[in-house]
Image (cartoon, rainbow, N blue to C red; front, top):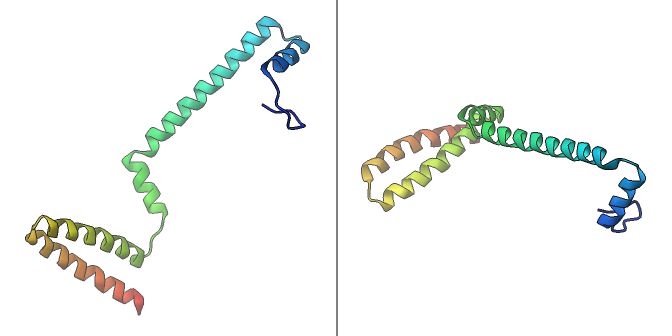
Length: 116
């Protein structure tokens, strides 16, 4: 902790300042309870937000908020299809590659339309 002059403040200095305020043991306990209570509430809120933000509804809502164009969606789809194609080629699953190629042809039409 630092004071206004950017000097380090020791724990003893903090305790001396509290003593100077005449807070007393009861006031200190009350302050400690309030601090811990606030920290617990913040942690609970953080946990709740973390849980909610990982839900399917949160992801789909956030994804919709991007308002992607048809071309941007097609680029994302193309990236996904190219990754799948690579995986299927490596595993020699050629039937799946044929299906991916058909879908890729459709995506390429969208991308060509966007480039004109």
